[in-house]
Length: 256
Length: 227
Ligand SMILES: Nc1ncnc2c1ncn2[C@@H]1O[C@H](COP(=O)(O)OP(=O)(O)OP(=O)(O)O)[C@@H](O)[C@H]1O
Ligand SMILES: [Mg+2]
Image 1 (cartoon, chains in turn yellow, brown):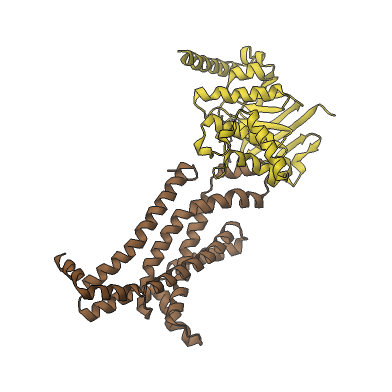
Image 2 (cartoon, helix red, strand yellow):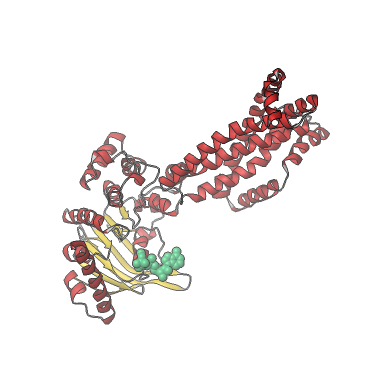
């Protein structure tokens, strides 16, 4: 078994004349958690959306588990193997929490109802969504609960990798913890994940590697301590100084 | 007001009420049949406009543009006075149903198209992200949400059709408005029968608008439409 589950090679994306991603290269090992940080407009979301083919890259290859997915036409089959967790949760508003998880299992995986039910419940419990919340609609859940249901929806599909696009940045500070906690547990249990986040504590504690993106390229990458605490380039130093400043402000305001 | 009150005490009042109400079935048949037929046509047209091939989309757009430009009374006249010339004489009620269906289908088409397009891009992305195909995303996410989004407007549209059905008076369909006018002519007093018939329309439309508003509020609560 190859240890690289995801290979991104020479990836380019343009919107009109504008270069959004230029020559992105990286690999993700099985069980690895990779964190991507970088300023707004760096192309982080676009990169994640290219990986699950919500956006078509213009050049380059993406290889998922030995499969060159950028050449596949049945994108829905590829997407069913990749979990995606959105900044704004994107739960199906017309479905209850458990039905949100069931939809993919029944309509995409085509599991029999009982089997789907068993897996949905297991997934929901693993993110701490207990039985009394299963029949609630997204609008009746807190942001933290919604995001955890969204994570359950992703993990129930038994994906090869889960992509998180700023999963906590739409949450009130006191709800961020419960989501990060679930993600940390996932990572420890060997799930492969790429996480775009500005939660520095999470990155330091959980990430195996951190990549700093700016202007559509990966500027610097390395172990979290190196990138977050001792970055080399001027641009990233300035960025990290600001991030740590905000981060400590958040922490102190929470303590106070 | 005094005048009206004394009229209510009048024994004749109930006779007139009865005459007007005796035609409420026609009003219902006319408005419900036109409305449901218009809904069927509009659903087909809106699916075509949202998912169909380019030439058909253009055709639907033109249909809507043209039909929305036709005054309702004109549509009724076309089907009542116009068709017999081509050898299709229709009873007034049928002409009225076809005329209202034609015009209302254009309005409902816009309603349904708006509802389908009103489903948030985020919801559609989430549907694709779990691996649903285009068709399954439509079937299990877009359609159920569009259906809910369309409900308040659809209920209101029925109120409009119900009131518009009074135009069938012009081609001699005996529905409640026609009856009210007949009574008015007999007793040589327009105000009272017309007030009465307004009250009947109001009694049907007010609860409908209440229900529609409830649905609307529920949709906002569920986050399916912006407030
Ligand atoms: N559909 C689109 N059409 C045109 N330009 C786009 C589109 N989507 C994104 N962009 C542009 O691509 C660039 C990168 O956007 P992207 O959302 O990937 O950045 P990001 O790093 O995720 O930023 P943020 O932290 O704000 O989420 C931005 O300049 C954005 O304006
Ligand atoms: Mg982004």
